[in-house]
Length: 318
Image 1: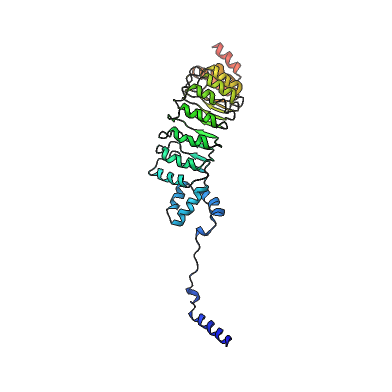
Image 2: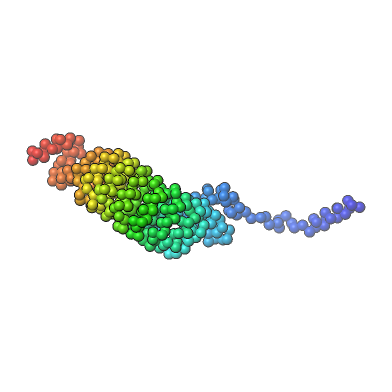
């Protein structure tokens, strides 16, 4: 009896079953692939921020996926991007990003403290911060960078007229591991705070002080004494410096590879000549200028391998 009932139940189930060709298989999509193991580390790495925001608009699942990718993103580069509504996209990054290490926002004229502070509060692993020519923020935005970002190595603040002596003093207290520092065209900083600041930067490799009025020979002497690993220095337009400061740099910064010294009228060949043997200098030597301007034939001789002493005899004969 039991076997008969079982057979009837089986036949009934077969009768109500759908034909094989009518069964709709479950659809597989891109987002079924593991996000954390595959899509985010291997796919989003090759997508720009613009690509990710376009993808974010496709669906709710795409939105969640992109925001998960933002949480792990280590680099944000919007330098020079002043397109329409870019500040709204940056606000999304401020809410989602948690592991940013490089933040490039140079020449972002829309950037204010209200947009910058949220992303700084959530990302304390920052190693590179580029705020060159960000004219609409204040020293308040630097506080999280100075106090919380202990791994900071590169800080660029060129043409930030809002940068004050107090902000540099705070940097002096909290950061001694900077390898690149740019405060070109920052006119509000005093000589005293720079002298104290450079006493701590013994790991500095790249330094830009172009058109900074407070850079004097005394500042260069401090740099020479404490930043001996310096490889590149930009002093263009520093009218207050002289051979005295450059001689200190040449003597102590033995790893120097380039020196930019245009528009420094008090710096002469007396201090630059010893450096020319081991470092690039953007200003042509006065001897070369003289030879090229008045005795063009000597340049041809020099290029053909004639020794400079022979050239000197030719000039004397003339």
